Length: 221
Image (cartoon, rainbow, N blue to C red; front, side, top):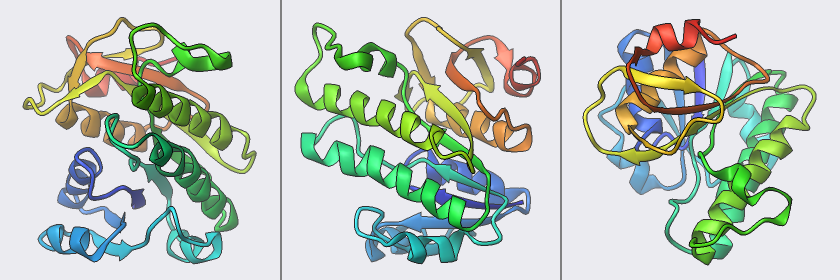
């Protein structure tokens, strides 16, 4: 399998890339700066330095050609600058979708976030700051925008709060799950399983749980 990962330098994207490379898949990792390229030099992925906030779709499509699937694991952290959220989490995701469409690559796996539906239709939940509100809005807009590209088959994964704990390989995967936590190790493993068994059109929450990842994916409707 040839996989293009936007955000290959991120804490989930890099884990996913390593899992894919370890079993012999081909990974094209898109990173924003030469510094990130240097950090990942020991990984087996083929790295491309592209700033998705300042890249033409034709340029990106040239690296997506011949891929079997594209993965969006990029974006800004929930903390940080409010204006940056829309560029990093929405616009960049749509750019990858447009590049995939131009390169005739249909499968698209998008890492989003639990909680995005709380800001749908202009809602503003109590107790969240401006930055996190902007983050959730951008993630939801990315989902909606990519879904509107008819030549792209979108699967959305919405992890719970991410941790650096070692993965357990046990999760709960489905819709409308209660809030919780999940390790980045397990999110990357779930993404790998969804690349092997795509669920186009699905929107899936994932939290730590009691079901082995492969079974959790296999049991999806």
